[in-house]
Length: 66
Image 1: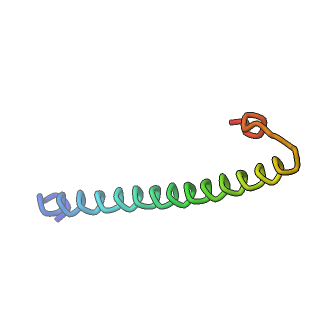
Image 2: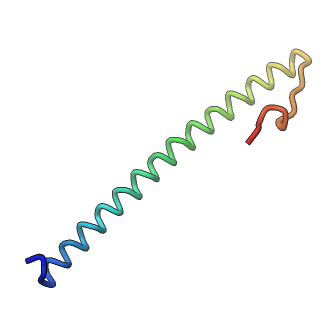
Image 3: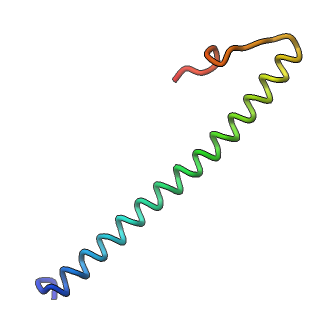
């Protein structure tokens, strides 16, 4: 059956499903990382606000090196 049109279609469908699974996994990882980034940004903003209340001002360029 692998040499027939039906076999080729089944193979292409399986390949398409695998590709979609890989893409979905990558999107899930990206989404998870984005959520973590937003939480980290909120935490940094809170820390910077606490520092500012205590008279310590930190420029964002001083804290990020990427």
